[in-house]
Amino acid sequence: MNRPNQNPEQSSLRELIERLIFFAAVAFLLFIGGLMVARLGWFPYPIVDDAVTAARAEAIRQGWINEEEAGATLVDGERADTLAGVSFHDASLSAGGYTVYTSEIEEAAVMVDIAGNTVHRWSLSEDKMREHFGAERVPDARRYGWRSFHLYPNGDFLAVVTRSKWTPYGFALVKVDKDSNVLWGNFGYAHHDVTVGEDGLIYAIGQEIREDRIPDFDYLKPPILNDFVLVVSDDGKTLHRISIIEAFVGTPFAKAFKQLVKGRDWKGDFLHVNAIEPYDSRNRIPILRENEVLISIRNMDALATLNLGTGKITGLIIGSWRAQHDPDIVNGHIVLFDNRGDFARGSRSRVIEFDPVTQQITWQARTGNGFDLYSGWGANQQVLDNGNVLVTEAAPGRVVELTRDGRAAWVFNSPGRSPVNPMRAPSLLEAKRYAPESLSFEFNGQSKPQETP
Image 1 (cartoon, rainbow, N blue to C red):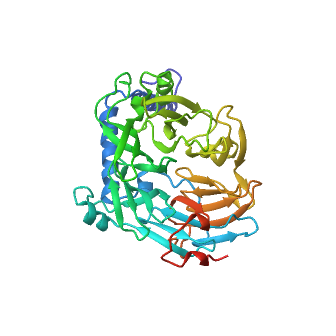
Image 2: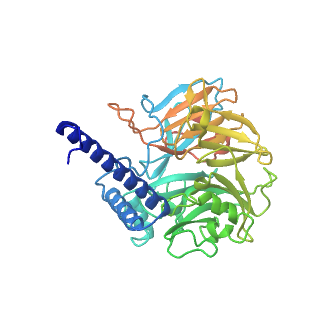
Image 3: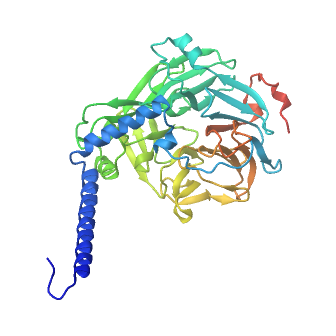
């Protein structure tokens, strides 16, 4: 019906505008409603979310799409346009020695000299694992790989074996000799990190899917990815298995735990513990006491101390870092890889050294002559004997030896790069440097004394 003194064309235009405003308002209300449903977990969000997650996980597992296409992870680090191997070396700055690394494409670890030549390899294929441990222990996954490791002076090699794109993420600890003969395996779903303490015991992180609610933490909706501290004997026997979520229950840090995980949708992965360091009487810090371990809890942006006797959290540190990895205790300080805490550079990465009591940063590396650090996930660092810091940028697949005054001394790029497209390169999961005098075994690539200068 036309209004008085209004021609039909004006009336039609007015009606069209009113309809557009109406539909825009409805769309806005639906958008706000959808946000509230997703944020508060109202029906039907749980059903839809679980279905989408399950479908995406199955598509990845079947190989129909890869993780990047599914949005499950991001590359989170630029691939250098450099071919594999050593791209820079300044002998006057470098500490020298041999570097051992693991990558995402091999069930193996590789040792290279300072020129990038392979001098030794340890490996254990899926078929060999199945042959040694049995098909029940080693299902046909075709996605096994080595991550963290410990090299003994005699060439024995301890590795964290993981299964990518599977949940729980972890799989096993495996120890082989210098010729890759299996010594033992521990199938406690170890993942991310392993450290050998001064007592000779092995400290690692395990994982399981928990289907029931945790007392006092019933706001955590199952299923929950529950991380554990694992203490393993030198012959592979599990001595301690302590639930890290339950370690918060009944402590002064229970409320802090709730505040740090509240409102975060981690698909049940509320902690994502990615590193462990045991107490060492030779390298003490005030916050870590005897019979305790220091752990890194990525999804809480926190470091925590846990007593192995009581099984409880004894301390919690929240700092300026975000999504951190690999806290190392060095000369009374903690050195860690801060994946996303360099806010001045758009939440990029840095390595920081800080006083664990005052949290004052005493040294950091972000950018410098020959490097610009960024790895959105993974990564680790090692302080060398001469004070240099060996940094593994996991996502870009690069290892950089840095001087304390901000110069690159040695740069190693991930093998497996395509000559056609070097920007596509495997990630490097961990790298460590060893002085020649610390190793007592003969290499299977070339003899130990013949290191290339």
